[in-house]
Length: 459
Image (tube, rainbow, N blue to C red; front, side):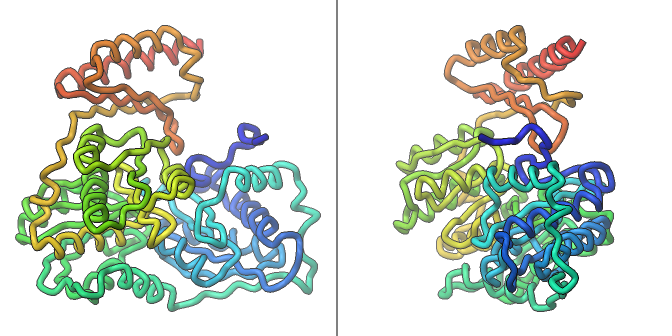
């Protein structure tokens, strides 16, 4: 039985919050380091190692040192790699045969936020049961009696070749019979973790790279750049007459692509493009693609035309990966640009996704605007509602009746999705259909009704 809901440190993607405010404090990072070290040490001593990486946020230094102190206090050695994309950490944890990996990042959030997420020795994010065990250790106070003796304290060291290892891995995922020679690529690294490895891998494969967001200062990660602002890349692509643009987020696990015309190609369109490529080459496993409930109906229709199924999960790339592993699928992802090629890596990888997209363009010898043009998106409106408390939606009967009425109005031509964010104090109201004006009107109306319902429930 899960203990979740008692301490509730973990959300959909690790522990996250405002830096230096509970739970994202140095004290909590130290305790998390102790707990994860104990869990993966297995109760015994020996040459156990845990890898720590981070993005470029100012608070990363504080959390890196606190985690290292906690881990080493339990008799486990620490390897620090500095700024590294989240998918790079997943790869390196398994490649270097570490017991676990720790990534310090709040992904696409601003620099004031930070987060801590863990990978097991196989490079996959932790199952709920392990996160529950970590929470229990911290809440129970057991850790005080589990620290290593003076002779068994772990060591911490920093390695300098981690970036090179990840670059080599990425290059090996690109077809050996292809190059990027002559291709003009605009790359926005969001002043985040890929600011070095991103340009390097593209240049070494032959591309002419025009960089953006490669001057991190600790405070400018994701600020008016990266995958949240693909229009910046689009403008640069048009200005330079580049062949393609690639926009990453702060930890480089998501990728939004821009065509040579400056058209934004989101995660759903990239999924459809990649599915078509794998299916045509007989390499799509399981006959289906895995996506979340947020993915556009246009993706579903595009896959139907290919004879490919769509398996939907709750939001969060960890749930996409879980469904992929359980069902034997090798392609999945999210509308936001988390694309998972399970044949190559264990989590969403923005640079890998960009490389696979470029490989498809090279094989087809066609521009991205043509390749992505067959995907017709349904109008989709998403309204965020700030909430003080995430009350169960089923406990709001009047609001549920409003949702049912909207679903009746759409009459099979669209859908409604209401959910709470796993990382922010917000509710997401999504309405999708074939009439953009109607979709926007219905989403705004439902958002207002939800706000009133929550206010009334809290009175």
